[in-house]
Image (tube, rainbow, N blue to C red; front, side, top):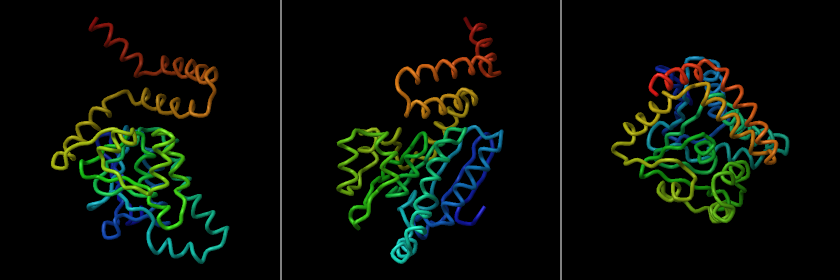
Length: 253
């Protein structure tokens, strides 16, 4: 693991920490590579049930590193395509990861940083957290993050956020459906830990199948989505977790 990303795992939870607090955890090639490496490691660890993504210091991630932005001015089409592809591949790996990914957001989550937060399956935020896509303010397009945003909020709200570059509060992000929960700043760690502990207690096979099916049906017509549901339902019935769960349920009945 490179020093810009910290990784630890224990008690069924893997923690991926963006570790450039002096740069507000700004994204560069090494940081993105470190996150991707940590995702692979957590996916291969069968003891991991939940993956957390968080930022060191006061911010989650404030977007692209200034040096990286300067580099794009001199780079050609091929280099810029490769750079954009790296972030897109990170979003894909988060979507395809077999475990639920939970983003814990303190401070700012902006531009690509907002993309990473909302690419998680669940987003928990501190009251003072802020979210936004300021790219248009510098003549840029929030292109890959738009794909995630559009799946989370209405079309009009998505366009407004992208076009104005407005930074919104955690409460507003919750109201429009961009994130899942908001906790008070002073209890955020404890509240988030309680939430994650509860989630980790769920059947790992059921969570994996639920995540896989939910994102598969994004691109399916209604009938095909139902057929995929039939297949997943059948697979779930064959898992050890299902059999144990049914036995326990019948004993309580």
